[in-house]
Image 1 (cartoon, rainbow, N blue to C red):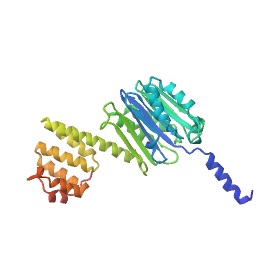
Image 2 (cartoon, rainbow, N blue to C red):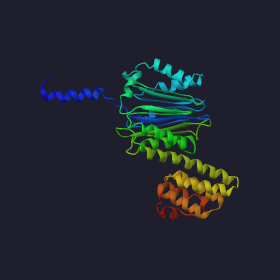
Image 3 (cartoon, rainbow, N blue to C red):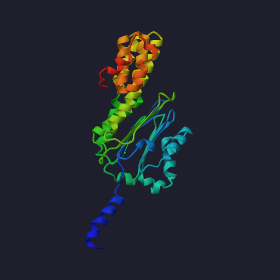
Length: 320
């Protein structure tokens, strides 16, 4: 080999053999609600890594992902197999997907009874740092991490967090990032929660490519909460519970992130409450977020005498 080709050959060999994965995730079930939160340096992590089914369990397949493992694991657990039994089947039937075998997998399962099972193959263990931590009803795992503090921080945050399952999962993911996250950067994140009620209470949000995937994911989850809050406000207003309706509207406004649909429904709820000041405010926010639709909404006859398209369109842009 010519001398000037040797460095190139060595670089190519290292690139071909060095572990490329860098992912951290948490899976959990809270009674019949099961979910996953995951972040990685690769594109569109939510397209192939995270799986959950209400009343059954949750699964992640990462490092070198085998997407067949998610649906198969859920089917096995739904049929009565424990996570450990399902995991053994997954590894035995890996099938060398994408030219990789079980040693390139990091797979974690939790069922609705709180049982867990995690496997980290030899290749995944060779990344910067790989491991897992588990407790009743949850498991955190990762590879290519800045260190063990990432997983410890995730576990601690999940156990300390309040709110719905989605809020605790997201808190864990954010804590992992704050503790160093992945050693080779970040690009995408996802959160899925499946509930017995299904849509619209289920969450399935993905940030496929972003310089700040976790803040973007939080904004999506908060928009979800804003929509649920404005629905509660609508129901309370129809029942004549003015205090509850006003409180829910205030919550929605805090979490809306400028979402025009939240402002539109909030304006109609305020109209039911007879709060003309709030009607004008919400229409102004809607127009600031979406001028065309905002003008159309403000021109609806239901607002006659309360607000005008000019009022809504000329209002200052709200901060959120």
